[in-house]
Image (tube, rainbow, N blue to C red; front, top):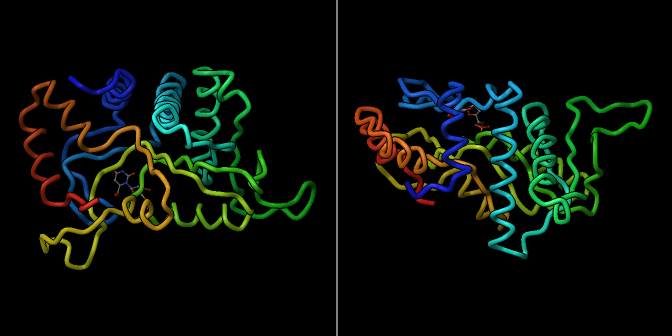
Length: 233
Ligand code: OMP
């Protein structure tokens, strides 16, 4: 199998934890999917360690392949992104303390605080800093655009986004089954902001993994779904 070791380890943990499930699932978009990725299940210590290591490896490997990719802060949008960003920055320091030891995390409050230190950012200030957003899944892109607005408002510079899973699906539309190629929400964000949107895993990785395991029925259904909804970029 050609998947890097950290991806294989993460995939195995996803399946064991039930975070990656095969079956029949109705998505937010109303598409009927043969699989579902649920990042909410990484609350157990060993699984949090697994997902945060995988975020850290993905960021580190991107920064090795593109030395111009520099960041100061991992921003975890409330609420789901908060533990992910905090745990990922800790794992980055484990990977390379000299390179990542001074990186920070921060997150937004849903409600602005009007006493004490005030404001609605907790952790590192975003002002003048290079920011990477840490999120779980982007489907329609609604949640990620809210996070981008917060960074702009706070005077930060968005330099990248990392998600746990990229479904590689074209954006949902009223004529969903028209067979027309369309980009994904991730593809649109990449183009609009000119930044990398990294993913620990993509649907292609899962197909590759299943091929290695020889689960013919799941693989066939995933292949069909991928063909039907694949994004143009
Ligand atoms: P948006 O990008 O704002 O549409 O949000 C992504 C949402 O997709 C998540 O909050 C989940 O409810 C949902 N989702 C997953 O978490 N995992 C999947 O595999 C598929 C979906 C989905 O419904 O598309």
